[in-house]
Length: 201
Image 1: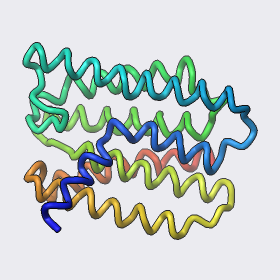
Image 2: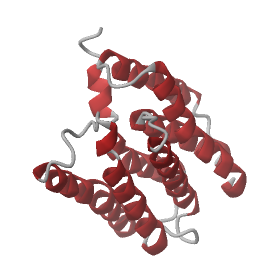
Image 3: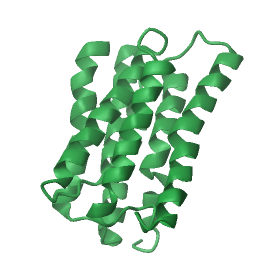
C-alpha cells in the first residue's frame, strides 16, 4: 500500500485542481452553455492554470529557484504561490467573472484566499500542505454545487472524503509534510470555500 500511495500525490497535484473544479462545475452546475462556450472555458483554464504554471516552473528550475514540482523546500514556495495568486486574479477579472460563472468565480476566489494564507504562513516558517489545500477546496466546492442544484452526490462526496485521506497519507509516506502541516493545509483549503458558500448558495 505504501508503494501505491505516492500515486495520489501526483494524480491530485494542486496544478490539476482548477481544471478538476471546472469539470465538476460543468457536470453539476453549468447547464445553459453551448459546446463552443464549454471549449473556450476549458481552453482558458488549461492555458492559465496549467500551461503557464508549467512554463514558469521550468523557467524557475533553470534559474535554480525551485528544485521539483512538489516544492519540498519552504524557500521555494513563495514565487509559485505569488504566481498562482496573480494568474487566478487575472482569470476571475477577465474570464471567469461573477456574472458569467458565479459558482466557479467563487471557487477560484476561495483558491486565491487559500494561496494568500499559505503564502503568509511561510513567514512563520509554516509549510502548509498545498496538496491538502487543493483537495479539501475541491471537496467543499463539489459539496456546494450539490447543495445549490439539489443533486444527490453522497457517493461522490464519500469518494472525495476518502481521497482527502489518501492524499494526506501519500504526503506522509513521501515524508513531505508533518501531520500539523497537513491539517493546516486542509483548513486553509476548506475554510475559504465554506465561508464563500454563504455568498453564492
